[in-house]
Length: 513
Image 1 (cartoon, rainbow, N blue to C red):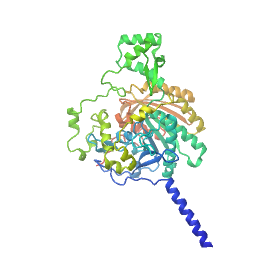
Image 2: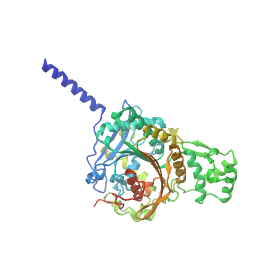
Image 3: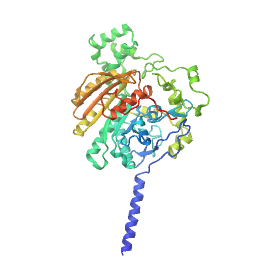
Image 4: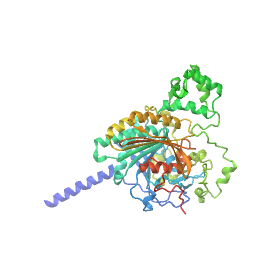
């Protein structure tokens, strides 16, 4: 009888264990080097899919890069950073392989080392979201998309809970969420879901410490109203046109307080001036971009692909060549036109069969789609946002935290016309007032003894808000100014409000021998 008891007990234990395995997939280690890497990367890499719903029909692709400080036995107590790109429909693998990850893509589709990789100071988690973006898909409808702010937040929160079931040892780490562009909506809506779930389920608690928003769509009206003076003071508007704008739109009053947005229609995250008023007509003249102007980086120039500079910078030996050694780390423009061609190079890399196999892309996705793209047109077309103003979301987060620590960093490259730094400053003041925070003086901050931008901090009790500019950067600040951005993030992780500090941080590039 005792034997029968133990037999039945063992049988049920085995069934339970099997059930657990089915519900919680194993970690997916990338146990071979990434194809066509031009350097020996020693860090731990993992990738696979997280569940976006209870049934497991929604599968969100992720990549996880462990901190190099762990590999080098420098620091075991590192934060975990979730990075999200925006769009909507823009892949976070762009963030991983063109901005903050340990690899950057060569023009020929090979990889070289990012000397300013953020995993020098944190574990990096990249999530392709929403469904229909990158390798993320719906098993019931491979061509389907899941769109909308609320649905995306719920799906991301579910995927994150799945992540911490798989990587339960990471629950103790300080957790931050960062990203840029439309991720300014993804991030606070996800943070709100995390805080709500923390209140309901102590066992699933995530140690959320703060969020970082880069050139974000934080408030569409504020950003649009700030864009109009921005384009004038950068010399893009005729003086007569400007006088008409002040007269017709602002009654010749303070243009800095003028509500230009009332003369436009909001479509897909952007205001378009209407043509039914004189003000709208003048705004259309002012905001219609001249040929060649990059709205997200007004200083960026993309020349013909056969230019001499590009030919010189990318020698014929291609995959045996580490571009990281060629970059001029003493220059403010070291990248050889990287922002002009990285999307095509990434598309080439992630569309190859061996790469997809190495990073564990599902066979179902590979058979149906085959080709990866950095931005999903179906997602962008179908997505309708509902959070045109994000300050109330932060208010809800802080209220639900009930006095717990929470940090917010809003940083902007100062060459972005659309998600502009002036609008971010105004939004910062608006958010600080809503949260009852007190502001200090706006001061410069420096990187390697050169001006890197300006900063202002707002604080009260355990809540802090830092608003920074990144000098000389556009919409993708870590791409344009990698060193200053790594220093900025390092100080934010440490809770330091002086972004010039280099305590525990070497601002010089580190390359593998």
